Image (tube, rainbow, N blue to C red):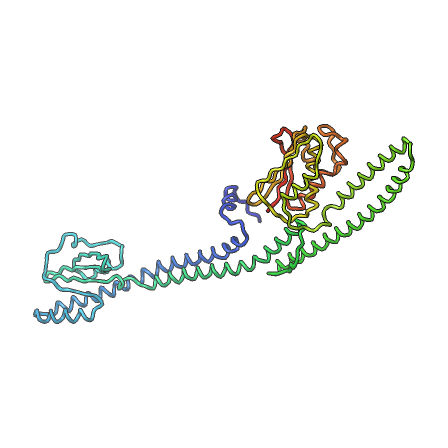
Length: 444
């Protein structure tokens, strides 16, 4: 049975719960233990503290009652003086017998306060008393008013409070800290294989080599790692087979096209031959575009590359009369990319902007966790409703872009494929030059 929670409970759960698996696992282990310890401590202190305090207080009061009773049996001052010396050496507290004094009015009122278990127990002595707290000496001063004398008793705090409660509290806190420390070490070792698997999957998705990756950790994590390895091998094998097939197709198609080109070039002064040669060039260009799109980016290894230098070199090789191209970068950046694919990605966007605008600005903006490359022009732009369609294969604009310069509709599709293979995303927006702006965002 599925329990439906209110939206505010779901939102609170998402805000309170940590997002990382390590923190969530640690919380699952620690929270129940802390809860059980808290309840146990509350029950222990509620019962143990009261019982021990009452018994300690009753024991001290019993000693006071015995001392007062024995003092009353002494008849002569010499006996009383000798007795006071004896009890001062043998009792746990100090007691003095003073001359009788009048009882304060507030001492005649029976106290009902529950601030300490000692105060209710002192009523069992049967004499009015006044209690004073001596904070600096950590003593309680109690004066009992008897018609024949005043007994002044000094009681140390430690005699009517149990120190075992602090030991239990220290033990519970220490045990909790030790448990958290052990759980952190244990969970960290369990999370490491998952992080390695995540890193391997990310590197493989970005086209990087995944070397020395071995399944580790619990059975479930190892199973996921073995599944990833099988998936990686299947994808790699598929790319290799497709590449071999495309190489054969490329050879089979280009060979007859080359023969046709040679035959047509030998037919001089023939208007039909010139038109046919133009068709052959167009056909060869289309075949190359199709093969490039189908081949993708599986043949090149990713290497560490200076991104600003790569963009500058690409732009230096692209000159077109009447078009101004400018490159602006806010920082240096080196990333592991497939250099030729990345260069081709920039080339496709810039050449596309050169076809439709007279001003082309290329920018590199490096931020904390990602960097973005922008290409904007002052051309006619693309309608908002068609900006997602232009990234589809074989899609060509018929209104805002010239079909003669639009190619076969694979340039932006190849560009998007390259961007996605590097873990990035690409989208279009309005340009500050009143044209179109293409933004590519890549993770660092």
